[in-house]
Amino acid sequence: MGSPALSSRRWIWQQYDHMVMGDTVQRPGGDAGVVRVHGTEKGLAISCDVTPRYCAADACEGAKQAVAECWRNLTAVGADPLAITDCMNFGNPERLEIMGEFVAALEGMAEACRALAFPVVSGNVSLYNETNGVAIPPTPAIGGVGLIPDIAQMARMGLSRDGDVLILFGAEAGHLGQSLYQELMLGATRGAPPPVDLAAERRTGDLVRRLIRQGRVSAVHDVSDGGLMVAAAEMALAGGRGVGLDPAPEGLPAHAVWFGEDQGRYVVALAPGEVAPALAEAGKAQVPARILGTVSGQALKLPGEAPLSLHALRVVHERWLPELMAAKIG
Image (cartoon, rainbow, N blue to C red; front, side, top):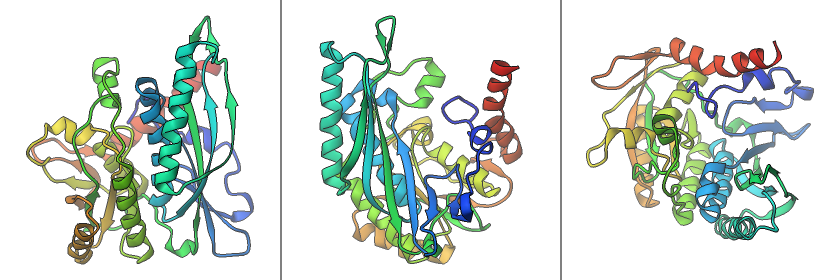
């Protein structure tokens, strides 16, 4: 949570007026920003996503994942994803390997856009991004917009009620290739990025959006960089409430369960009385689901492990960027 990839970006966004005309109804730090359509109760949800390490390992699968994660982030706040724009950032296309990355990324994007009904309506290209002949990783940045018909139905990621139950929706296989866990533990990323099942992505997202619109959830967050443990920690920090997590299910190593970056997953908080109906609805929709834990206290707790206080976690999460910038500009 204190690494460059996951640390808080508060130092940046708090320096700007992110509440223009009072129409920003979901502030920075969540899955998507939400801005009220002025004078109405509609909201526009906006997100921008790409994971360059995935794209460097497999440009097609990485670009597909960027589109899917953008779609997922819009869904996580309760929006109907409408369309994307892109910025295709690559090295020198006169080199065959760079042009190959570019073509593969386009193919992955196109496949995801068709499967998710998420069309490209604009975009731009930035090429020749190299220093001394070394190119940047292929970086097809995806910006997406979605519509929330009534902002009263908008979802947030912060946990808000003690006693709520956390449900994980989506299949888990413990994929650690190209993960942040691998990078931080080994100092390098290896293997293939997590595969993207676009049909499952759509089934799971449509289910989560339906639960949000029905007013049955108190918090939602998609699972992405860092995996399941990071998602739970981000929800806890955003709401100032702790979580008691259940043991990892049998059949997968615990570190793969908690830090694997399998795609197409959401953590949803529900009142205890909503758990059985939500699990039943997931079964009908062919969406894997399991109980993850319970909201309580002021710490992250795993069975058999010492609790990690939210205060200690917040200090680590918040300090990296201010300390970096103080060193750069001091």
